[in-house]
Structures are given as structure tokens and as C-alpha cells.
Length: 262
Image 1: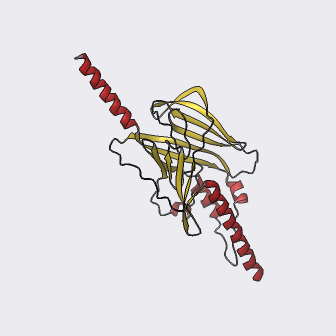
Image 2: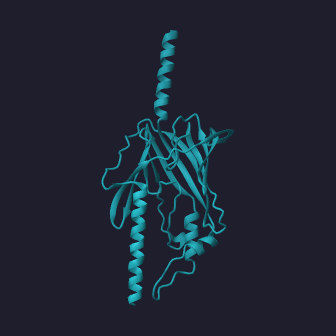
């Protein structure tokens, strides 16, 4: 009887651990926006008799600063992180809609934790690319500080990205998955809250800190396998940034030539 009970307990435990690797996690991302500096730093050029609406920058601020919802789907070592699009007629922001995400997964990202790499689709000048690169291995500093978050006991960890950006994460050791929102990963538990801190000393920064916080964690035992994107026009993050920079320079040159002819 004792052996039978032990076997039953082991099976239940094994099933629970299996389910724990198949999760849906909802997050909400909030960006601190300085509307005055936004107006100064993000000037939109117009030509001819075209002029911007008076409330253009106010609507831009509302669109950027409103909370945005994301979903992290975890199936063993693969996960996807994507923005949840809301159905809206845009009347609240004067028909204006603009989205910025500092989590690295605004357009959707697929992570393979076993290979420590990520991939995401991108488009440039009507050409589609698959950005594929290695996940950053953050040098997390674990602390003893704890708190409760949506019913989970979480612990605090910090990391420095560079001289202008640092991270404060709260992870749940009870969810033994080294994943988190966007491109962030590598802690001994799922990241349920992340603050991306803008350490720039400039007083003229448009964007302050970004806070990403989990609102729900749900087990999905019968989850379908996650499919990796097809590998076509594969490019690294750095290569894509360089390509985008060159395209922007060409666009400016063409615009300058067109204005000089006028």
C-alpha cells in the first residue's frame, strides 16, 4: 500500500511539473513618457501646405503612454511573446495610433531557451526578413528581497545592460522556467515583473522607465506545439540595424535632392 501511494505521488508530481512547462502568461507594459521632451525630440517634418493637427503630439503621447498588453506562451524550451492587439476605432486618440515597446518583442518574438537564441520577423522597404540572434546572457545579481505578486512569492534580481540602461526583475522560483517578457531571460524562475531603467543623465530624454508586470499565469496542459518561423532572408540584429540605417540615409539623400530641385 505504501509503495502504491509513493508511486501515485510521483505520478502526480511528474504531471504537475510537465504542466508547469506549458504556460500562458499575460503581461502589461507601461512606458513613462515625457510629453514636453517628446515634442522637442520627435519632430515630424511636413512639406508644402501640409500641417500637423494641433493635438498631434498630445495624441501621440496618449498612444505611447497607455498600457499595452502582451502574452507569453511557454511550451517547454520554446516560447513566444507578442502584443495583444486591441480592437479600437482610434477615436480616443483622435484617430492616431503609435506603438513603442522596450521589451524587444513588440512585433512578436520566438525564443529557444535550449539553444539560447531568438528570432523575429521584420520588414524593411517591402522586403521581409527573419532576425535570428543569440539571447543576451545578463549578469544577474540575486538579492534576498522578496514580495508577493499575483499570488506568487517573487525574489528581486538586478542587472546592468550598459551605462544608460539597467534592469530590476522579480522572478518566481516556484515556476522553474528561465524565461520572461520579451528578450529577457536567465533567472532561476519565471520573471513576473521587470523594470527597464533609463539611466541616461540627459534631462532631455523623451522616455523614462518601462515597467512590465504579469497580470495572470495560466497552465495549459493540452497546448499545441510552438512552430518556429520559416528561415528565409535570415539576418542578425546588428546586420538589420545597419541595413535600416543605410536605407534611412538613402531616403534622406533622395528627399534632399528632391527639395533642391524644387
